[in-house]
Length: 78
Length: 363
Image 1 (spheres, rainbow over the protein chains, first blue to last red):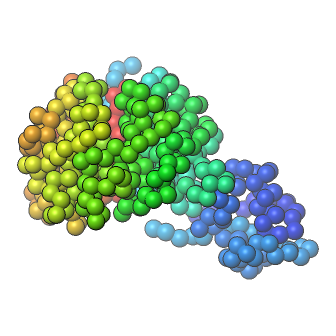
Image 2: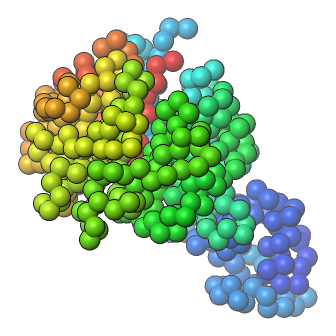
Image 3: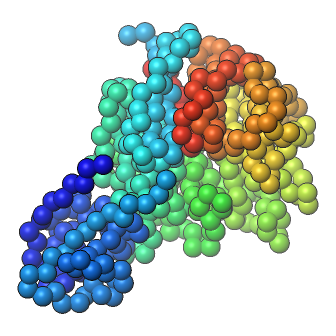
């Protein structure tokens, strides 16, 4: 399996704001990350640096300069 | 080009296409397309240049609609897939049905949670149909074992019929603008009121253009307290229904299919309610030749014992050739062909992924 990584270069103050920018600038990608209610899909994980952020309430936590937000698919299923 | 028989086989691991000459002696298989992703519905649109559509129901990245204009040699995603309005509060969980609409580029799509979407541009954009999706009953429907799904869309002149599990049968008489529950005679063995206005677990509905107003329904049967509610017939465009289950070994099942040239001929696959497998572990399709007055078991070629597969609601179809063949997909990944209207069965493919749906067209 090959893992494809793409850096978007989005600058935003929170995860929520990051997702908003993705929705605006990359609508096809956004559909894969969030459903139509705005919730991050069940098998998609969002990290700040190396820390997994599961609680959507934490999506409004302020990011620090230099933080990297990573969006990854959880490898699961059969 | 000579006519070809094209089979769309939606599986847990993607869509397979099997193609044969009219003789149907050998089917060549290709795929999977949308690999690794479950396909619950497929459509071969023959109104103009044949176009294949299939739902790609991705638990990771959401729902997509796949489209092929080269008879299933390659597929691309349509420009968009059905999606609820942002302020609706519902999120698409599955795509259960794809059907042609009234004009040449019109498509309908039934989804989970039970709602209807309409496309006027061959699937590149979709609008929710509010008459049913926001129906006053919609928030009272409950999911069945497969989810709260709109699995059946049947055009009937200006009428549009929908099957919802569990919601029941809904009828529009104004081309999909407004809908009413039309379940008189349709039972629900799991409800304290065995004949509620709505909320039945309809499994599939079928009709034939040569018998206007006649519909066949496979409902959720198998209830000792409500015998015979599983296989039903309507002769008034679905306003009222009556049992035609007498003579079947079980009135539980999922698919129901009508012969392409004779509206009196219909097929069901009776299953044991608790296991959803064929009675006595011996697979059989049952056929009526008189509109449901009597039924005959068709099992030649099937195993006589030790077979425990389920045939899901969209996993039985019939082609339109002069002597039509039936195609039956199983949850154990077998694809069977029933020659001469089901007189004799052969296994075309015996090790596909679990099969969700089978659609056939002669193009």
